[in-house]
Image 1 (cartoon, rainbow, N blue to C red):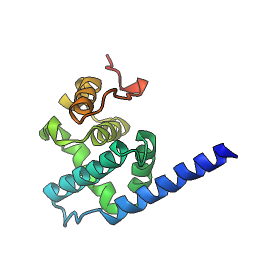
Image 2: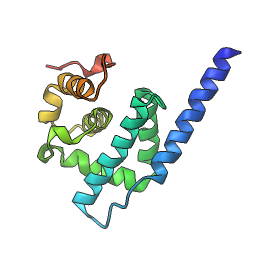
Image 3: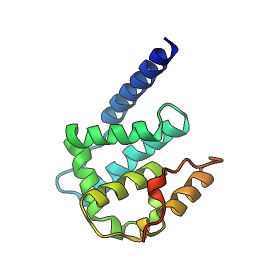
Image 4: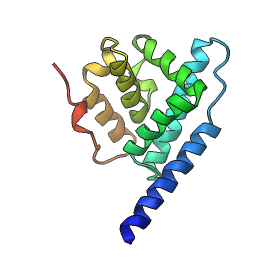
Length: 146
C-alpha cells in the first residue's frame, strides 16, 4: 500500500514537473540559433533546480526531456540546435542535468565527442559540488570511455 502511494507521488511529481517545464518553455524564434540554445539552457536550469530541491530525480528529468523531445517541437528544436552547436559552447554554461542530456542526445545522433564529453564525469561532479551538493549521483554509463 505504501509503495503504491510513493509511486503515485513520484508519478504526480513528474507530471507536475513536465507541465511546469512545458509552461516555461521560452520562445525560440524563427531559425534563431542564439534563442534556441538559450531556451535549452533555461529549461535545463529549471529542471536542475527541481532536482536540487528534490521535486524530481535525475531519472525523472531524463524521462521528462524524452517526452518533451517528442511532444514539444520548440524543445526538440532547441535541443537539436544545442547538440549540433555544442563544440562552440563553453562547459560552464550548462547545468549538470543539461550537460548530461545534451551529451546523450549527441551520442544518440552518433555525433563526435566534444570537450564536454571527454571527461564528462569529472565536469558533472565538479558542477554538482560547486552547486552545494555533497555527493554526486553519477550513473555508471557516465564514466570516461576509451
